[in-house]
Length: 471
Image (cartoon, rainbow, N blue to C red; front, side, top):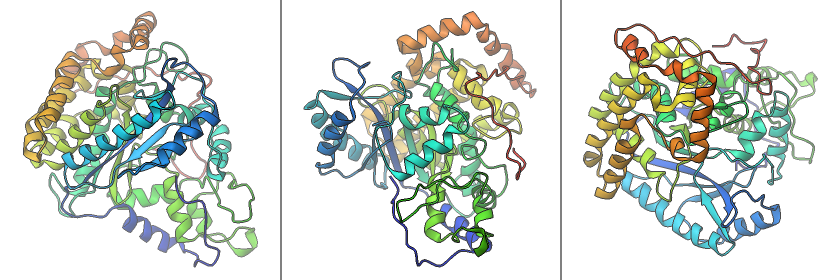
């Protein structure tokens, strides 16, 4: 959780200083090679996964985990989800070995509390916030303006987030501009391949990744990718023109920000407007409240992957991402495989465009996403030995590829809800949209008509912000 204090005597930022800082903070270029991962887990009762855990029971378990000596950073999410964030590693195996060792300790500690970690992208239990902090109080009130998706995201979702270096300044497969573009197209393939939050009812009935549906419907801007363009400039504009979620206070007052106030507006605030001027600390805090599918934080943080089943299911997406980003040959193959998907995505921003919606609804059963996934996973398998992956890690990726990707399946299909959601899609006629003819049209260079999205009344598509054209 970001720090909750602020300095009252820090110098105020001008608009120009803010833009320059965002460019410098969020894209630090150099030869790629480091890898990191942030693993979020749902916490369930060992004998009764449907049981609602009391805040006291969760806090006792969290306190026990905090007493462990871990290499990873341990934090908790608003609904009691547990997160381990690895330190930056110089190799894939260093990252995996660190997280495995820490997870062994955490699991052993939770067992003494009759609790276990569950790798699932979205919790079936009703959203219920157990963590109280000014940040989350303000966040909940902010998201409540636009519907229930915000509470579901805060309290019921879990993911595998993979962090890779931004890349080199120079062009090419390992250049930061290419890696930025690759992340946003490959992201839809990763959503599809690792979808693991099926829904048989509710607003995402029939979807393979209900978690992705929640994130897509979260907000009118802060959950979106910036428009295409030079990465630093595009991200700086996006960050400054996004509403401020929290105005931190040192006197115990609520952290609520005035509605519609963007960070750019805040830098232009005069003393008579009743607001203090923002500082670098405020800017850095604001950047932690932006939730696009790919978030630049010096490195690139890929945030679109559902939490994975099993004790070691998480290592497959970590290994695949490492191979496709850090091996030049695999990076080039992956870029060619996903570039054609841009036609299906259209002009709308991820994750709200037709490509990302199709990934969340159909997984790799969608023919074009399935074909891209097969090409990318095969490239990753070839690259893993070159980047030092162990035999067991290579085997895990090969098993996943054979069991899911090559079959047009995803982990959601193994879940009872996944089978129920397939029945729901058949009842809705939704599977007709994923007909094989779509792949033939894409191969011929003609865009695939996206399936019609029908937002549930409880999750309305939000109107664009009055101050900024939407993409």
